[in-house]
Length: 261
Ligand code: DGL
Image 1 (tube, rainbow, N blue to C red):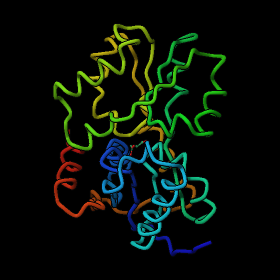
Image 2 (tube, helix red, strand yellow):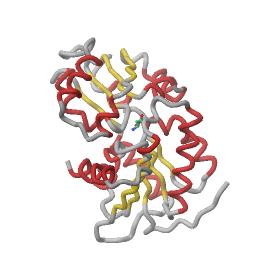
Image 3 (cartoon, protein in one colour):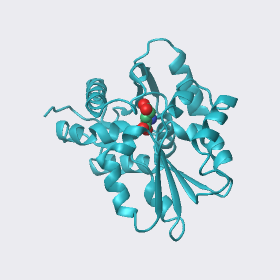
Image 4 (tube, helix red, strand yellow):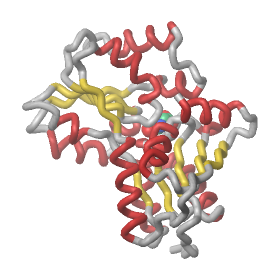
């Protein structure tokens, strides 16, 4: 167990395997604009979703440790894959620090109409893990839930390829059994996927309701910080520090671009 001094004006750390967690950071900034943030993407080791759980756990713990050493007063694990591999262990290691993970937003999708057909798109690891199995068990009587591993989808976002023909072709192949409104709702269970939301909507059909866990996760972090009296007291807008395990500036530029679209 490791103890750190937590101060109101310290930053909130946001962690992902790459640039995807920016979809969660933008929700955090929307509801807590006066906070400072450190965004860390482990793009050098991405993708996490096709690795072994133990490896993802170790990578996540190492990144979290560095972020706490930089003075983070709380951590958002803005990666569904890293959450299923490591969030429990992290909370045991740092019981005094607010640590919030993200999971596929299955609940609002299941509740969007009586007994909907819900497609859950996520990395192979997220779908395989116990955490997702438990989540599915909670709702399986209220909906037809279809888990769909999407290996390779995050790579388009990680390359900044958000609109290309290749992405469209990939989605058409991946989603061919569900296109043209064959499901009622889709859950984007990986933080990279909201950046391909328009293309996913196009292929699935315009009647399909699409959900992601970014906003719920941001709200949970606000609640946890408030509970510990750790919300920022500042009146002015906070700062964002972008860091990445790849040392060239391209990923940082991509993060800034994604935050502003
Ligand atoms: N962004 C991550 C998630 O939410 C995973 C992407 C990866 O495979 O690294 O699951």
